[in-house]
Structure formats: structure tokens, C-alpha cells
Amino acid sequence: MSTSTGPEGASGATPGAFVRPTPRPPGSVLPRAPRAPDQRGGDLDPGRTPVQLKRRTFAWLGLGAFFASLGGCAVKFFFPRAIFEPKTTFKIGRLDDFGFGVDDRLQDKYRIWVVRDPEKLFVIYAKCTHLGCTPNWVGSAGKFKCPCHGSGFDSAGVNFEGPAPRPMDRASVEVAPDGQVVVNVDRLFKFDEWDKSDGWKIKV
Image 1 (cartoon, helix red, strand yellow):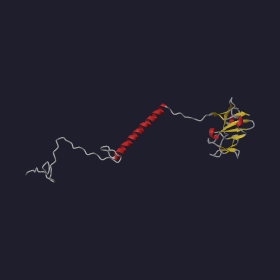
Image 2 (image 1 turned 30 degrees about the vertical axis):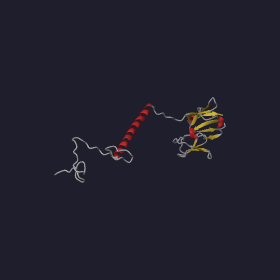
Image 3 (image 1 turned 30 degrees about the horizontal axis):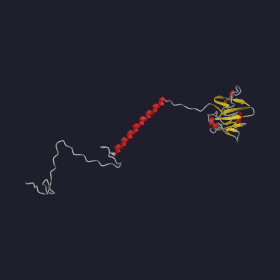
Image 4 (image 1 turned 90 degrees about the horizontal axis):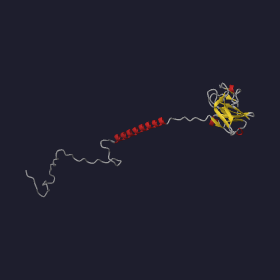
């Protein structure tokens, strides 16, 4: 069998004829075809599917959140939490700022009512003596009415209806050198103390 070396080609093979591939040297590796880019415009991580890549991202995010929480705990350890409570001693104004009767302007801010009559000014602590709810001043009825269980108190804070067992407490009051009325709700006078001390009233 002869091989042609005519003008059909430099190798002498005729068009359409089978050509045996050139053998590769031992140990050689074929070059790898380039991978098609993904929809984001970059190559996918070799050996990783999109689902695996997403899981790995979530894993890193979870690890970061874990270390962030550890850092927050460390900050709380070195800087203890401070509990800020409302003031128990405060100024409410001058005597002339309050007219006769019940003044409920400070109920929401300080939980007190200021009461003035022709002889004295005193402050009632707005806490029902039944279960501790905050009553409301009902001017049209001339009484304090507790919304929880219906206890009623007159304008002096003395109970007369409902389950309240005794009058409401009165707070300590005094006049400061600047003429301001100072109230201390940390010092309360119960009904049986009213005749024993004048610390709950200011004579006018």
C-alpha cells in the first residue's frame, strides 16, 4: 500500500482521507477549554454550583453575625447597663401658680395632683390604695375615680366608694429659698400620719 505525495497536500493525504492523530508524548495533558461566563459576567467558582455558592455566602454571613453578637456582649460587660428612673424630688412652681381646687396638670408627668384650699396647699400621690392604679380627676363630679375597680375619692383624696381601704397618700412638700414648691414623692404620708406631721402641707 503506497502513500500519495501529490499536490493534494503537504502531507500527501488526499481530501477526505482518514488521518491518524499525532500521538502525544507520555505525561502530557490536553489544554482545558475555557468555561462559559455566568449571567453575572464572571466565571463560576470551579466545582461550585450556584446553590452551593449561595449557601457559602449565607454561612459567612451567619459567622459574621455570631462574632458581632459576641462583640456586643463584651461591650455590655465593660459598660454595665444603667437604669434611669424618674426624679422623686422636683419643683412644680410657686404657690401663686395654683388656684383653689384640684390641679391635675402634673398627673402624667409626675403622677401627682396639687390641691389648694384657703388654708393650705398639699400634693396627693395619684395611686389608688386598692391595687395601685392611677385614678382620674373628674371635675364635673368633684371626685377622683379609679378606672380599674371603681374606687372613688373626694377632692382631698379621702375614699368614700368602692374597694379602696383608705385615703390616698400625700407627698412631702416645702418651699425652697427661691420660692418654688418642692415635692418629694419618695416621702409619703398616710392617713394616720396627717395629724402627726405638717410635712405634707404648706400653709398659705
